[in-house]
Image 1 (cartoon, rainbow, N blue to C red):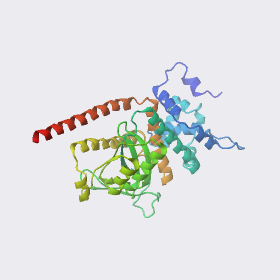
Image 2 (cartoon, rainbow, N blue to C red):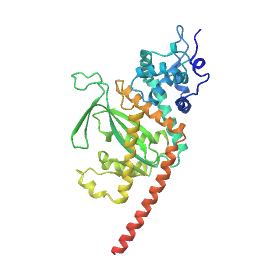
Image 3 (spheres, rainbow, N blue to C red):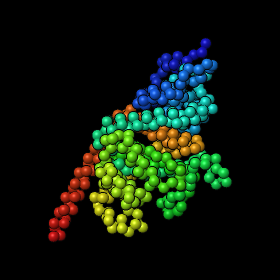
Image 4 (tube, rainbow, N blue to C red):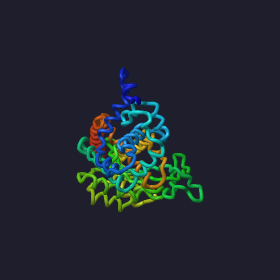
Length: 357
């Protein structure tokens, strides 16, 4: 007789908190249409694994930030609580590594990928309806992702990747064979609004208008007050787009080589105070890379890499909604307090000006 995990371990043992956290994340993901698309029509022969089991396993994979699918399989064997939460009732029902690989390939196909994008759009709209002033102050930035390939070979295995050339803090050149992930982030809550994955050799300024149009397409109520970016986005055409089409104030650091922009946009204390919110993108990238396996790519091709980034971000959003955004509420208080500081600085500057006169 085959005993289930629940019969063996759940009798007189306290369930660990991670299972309740996983269940809360599963509930926040509107995946009914995706699972129906993956199941498809009924066929003859062996039924195979239910797509809901494989989908929940992959969500667990990104939620726990596991390095590889082998670690996921090992975890399912070692931790029956997590396996049961994913829908696996006996050890023989744990999928193999090729099964997970085929499922991820199926997810990356256009039909299923469109359903995954709809889940991301739904979560983003939930953030708009749940969090006050969400999307009013946004920042954009890009980060490099190392591809699962070696670009030094004459024929790299990942032909969609490209060389990312950056300068580190010491002024030395940093070369990475991979991709660029561009994000539009709410600076108050440090949560993403839009995503764009490109080859590593594509300049981030080309992805900037796409991020803004994607945010407007996801939610027509996207009307930011500030759009913040570093000197890589210094372009008069892009500033004009922000002003005319989105009625927002561009807080973009001028490139030192752009003499006209340096004179036209002086870095006043008020400007610098708002520009400092741009560090929210850096903190978000750090969390995604450190805890949601964003920088641990085990697939090749821009279609699969974009799905990998999307899964990491969706799990992050779902967790924020599942936890009631407790951290975000704390940030709102800090946001209001920072607005008070801005007003105090403006009043002090006016007083100093009167004293000089």
